[in-house]
Amino acid sequence: MTDTTAQTGTPELEALIDRCLAASATRNVDWDTLKFQTKAGEKFRRAQVRYIGSGATGNHEGDSTVIPSEHFTFSNMILPSGCVGPEHTHPDVEEAFFVLEGEVEFSVHDVEDGTKTAKRVLGRYDLLCVPAGVPRSLKTVSAEDARICVIIGTRKPALPSYPVTSEMHGVTRD
Image (tube, rainbow, N blue to C red):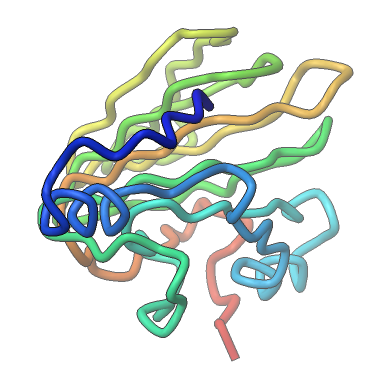
């Protein structure tokens, strides 16, 4: 990040830019927010790094390091090699995935029969945008960990559901 310590704006502009800034050095790598998914296996272990809002991973509104969301959420996910993001559906919102590091196989699943899928391996700077209501899953296929940006197109999405074809079906957050 470029340090521009010379302040030329008004105090209001300085306060505005500070409220809108989420520096990498101040992010928390949260391995616990999706920890409940490891009930179905360690391959589901991954971390969220929140920047704007909290997505559908729970209530993180008390986290003062996160910029409050008004219209969308933005986070990074750290996906260890071999990590699986289980088949799930966001009924109310599209979700975009932008790969920063590693290679990730993304799948979209048939709404009626989740065993039918289309898959693509995405690498650095590739993006996939999945419409609302379409089941999706992912798997890190690179030897190194992957990092992806996840953008969800609403301030606070409904919790995702896990279809009967998902390994996460029946697993609860408690």
